[in-house]
Image (tube, rainbow, N blue to C red; front, side, top):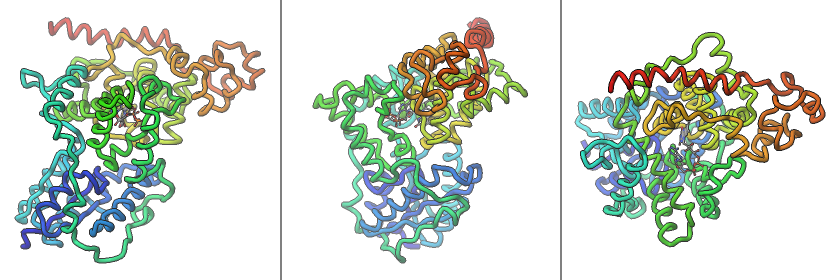
Amino acid sequence: MNLSNSLVWFRRDLRAFDHAALHHALSASQQVYCVFVYDTEILAGLPKDDRRLRFIHASLASLDAELRRLGGYLIVRHGSARDEVVALANELDVDVVHACTDVEPAAIARDLDVAERLLQQGRALLTYKDQVIFGKAEVLTLAGQPYSVFTPYKNAWLKRLAAQPETLAAYPVDACAHAFAPPTSPAALPALEDIGFTSGEAPLPAGMEGAEELFEAFMEDIADYGRARDFPFEDSTSRLSTHLRFGTTSIRHLVRTAQQLMLSGAGGDGARVWLSELIWRDFYAMVLAQNPHVVERAFKPAFDAVQWDAGHEADALFAAWCEGRTGYPLVDAAMVQLNTTGFMHNRLRMITASFLTKDLGIDWKRGERYFALQLNDYELASNNGGWQWAASTGCDAQPWFRIFNPVTQSTRFDARGEFIRRYLPQLAKLDMKQIHAPWLVTPEALAERGVVLGKDYPAPVVDHDAARRLTLERFAVVKKAAAVTV
Ligand SMILES: Cc1cc2nc3c(=O)[nH]c(=O)nc-3n(C[C@H](O)[C@H](O)[C@H](O)COP(=O)(O)OP(=O)(O)OC[C@H]3O[C@@H](n4cnc5c(N)ncnc54)[C@H](O)[C@@H]3O)c2cc1C
């Protein structure tokens, strides 16, 4: 066996700069091969026209082009990733497979399996932190325990970064590029049709260039982020979540920039607030890694006692929510945004998740799974954290007795109804008072604006005040459980 050959296994890190595994492999090997596997274990559950596959496909083309520029190339396989990687390591006779660590329980199980099978062949799997700034046990309380509240976690995170600024140092790739195994054939990545999916345009600018394009556009506006980020119509957030999800940008690069803008004062308050959002991402990754039970159950066990509605009526309400037919315009407009673009603004994720759990009484896990299918940026840790926050079952969650009023949220965050009009053109002629709650407008006044309730747009599927009372009753079991525990 040639002891100086290695294989870099790309998963959710589709870039060729500031890349921990690539850097370590290139620094320690004579020849470095690169592989990405379209993993049938993941693809099996996805619809044929899944938007994310188009993003991945375009990002792989960009990654391959960049690797070729550096002197290497990307091998792309389709099959069970665990089998393909072990087989390829054997075929290429490498001694080490390098990859970036993943915190999702299924990925951890897969990696353990691959490590074991490689070991049987006398090879090793080495993994490196890359996806987050601080891993699951790097930011702990003074008592050595993981945090369960965000603000103290954030303060400790910032303190640790101040003490260890080298954490943000980039992992260079160019300097050791001579170790790439040269291409054996001209570029020819499989088409999406070859792996059973439909091709088409990516849902947002893809690959490393796509990330840079969004990043640069966002840098123009970052100073105003703190104010504008809550207003969906303004499109004022970075839209980098899908790039962070697939690793087409580097979290270190983003945090470094936010920090520099804060220090120079050029980023206004926006840079500080944006950095805080990036820390939420680390926080939820830590929560998942420390508490893998959250995948199936409430973070706080007492909340597993909450009885969500099920059965025919709940199924019909769930379908209305998924399809944007609840009769609450901002909720519906948000769901249309999700269904048609694969993105939903953060404020709207909170509002729709709250509506599903607190107004419709439906289990957060159903909503979480729906988001998982639809979101371009879907990633287990943040999605689970966001859902458990909204459902009040999670870590540092919204208290269960504080229930979003979907109409108040609409008048606050889409005061002029501009977002609603963008996604629900049938309501476009309603004025800025009518548009938040069309059922409160007389049928005559609605007809003047071309809307017949129940025909052009649904009547509300629930009454918010009644739903609110039911939710308070539903969560009373938690209060009782807590009282018994105390
Ligand atoms: C119910 C619910 C589900 C969510 N599901 C996901 C998901 O599957 N994937 C995902 O990346 N984010 C998820 N979020 C968090 C957040 O909504 C998105 O990260 C954000 O809307 C992405 O837009 P952006 O890139 O323009 O964000 P920006 O406002 O520009 O923020 C920058 C980055 O910070 C991170 N971030 C921002 N807010 C949060 C947050 N609350 N939690 C964790 N990270 C955050 C993201 O990586 C984001 O790209 C969810 C939030 C909720 C309430």
